[in-house]
Image 1 (cartoon, rainbow, N blue to C red):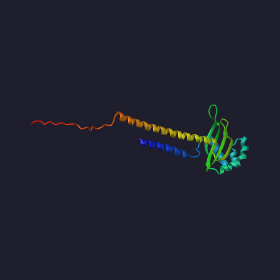
Image 2: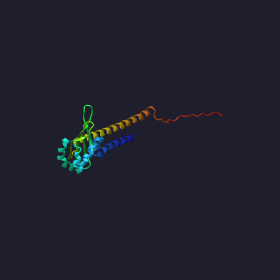
Image 3: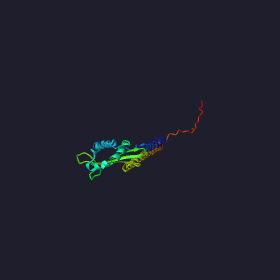
Image 4: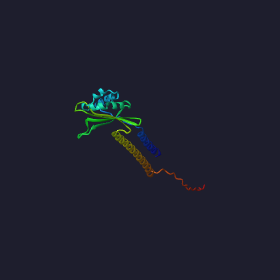
Length: 204
């Protein structure tokens, strides 16, 4: 019984440690057609290659992209490699619209968060074009990333709590079964009562 409760305590502590040691950003796998645009686009911005970056930008956003390019390129140059943290297709009546998506990239540099939001659109069967992008530095993580992290923490502690309750229930069940066995079939008790014995003298 003691071993079971020690195991429960160990499982609970492991859940707590995993919550503390998780990476600041959990990478989300992007679809190939999305990554084929965002990966070279961010690489071009980081190395300051405006012409290469503009190949992926929609014509109606090129002018705005040029205005912000130098400032945001400087932010990416001094930041760690950004990781794809959120992939969000546009909600639709019949399900997510994967032709209009938003991707959030993020990395933590010391106490500062560097993030980039990229919004893309494509005609059905066409190639993605970037309709909007930016790069930000802040002490707080992007709002969507913070919400996702809160949900992950909740699920982590919820699953840990459920596991602990299940183990406690198992421990109680084992205890009840053991007690029931003792009641139905009690352990044998050896008779220690003295037995009186008599002897007769048989005449010869």
